[in-house]
Length: 271
Image 1 (cartoon, one colour):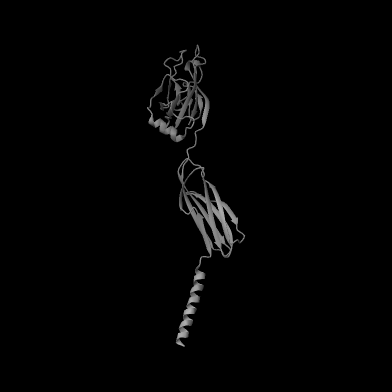
Image 2 (cartoon, helix red, strand yellow; image 1 turned 120 degrees about the horizontal axis):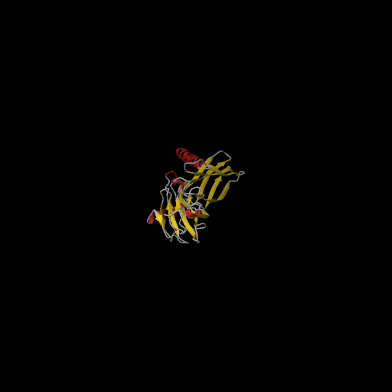
């Protein structure tokens, strides 16, 4: 009799254990591929994510959000699941392009029909992408003896007259010791206090803010560039304290005809 009771208790314990084990099983299961929590990326890159979810009671809703660390979260998908028990969602995510490095969070949130709620997240360490500088074309510096504008404001992108504009707005100016000379000086200075670097090997076509700054800082700075010729590339850092930035100047033509009326230097610039 005692043996029967012992066997009964063992069987009852086994049944209760199995029931507890079933009840303890996770009813809502999720995973994300890639499995790495922290990923590396760069602006413009496409990252593929595969979000997997299953629930014995059926899936109800999937919400996917993106958030740049330090900014507000933004929902990029909010979809009803219609009670299906198993689902795999593929997210083809294009990383936003920025010039700075930043951290991005991609969050996958699933809710099932019983109100169970689970979240998976992936962090992307994004490397900033340098954007090509925009070119401004058709600028000119005239000889002062011509009676035309002999200076240029690189911030406002406008021509200036040396006798009518303050030094701070004349980032570059035609240099001449003789205001009535009919010979083009082919030299420039910066009344605004900037300096120049003659850098003909600079990659002007693919110039970015970073490559321009690095090239300028690596070169020999001078207060005046003389003997200017077509095809030369001149880098400068603006002297004005309120808007210190860099510019790349590409000389497109040097015109020195008899007399001074049409004497000028033509150039394009990026900044």
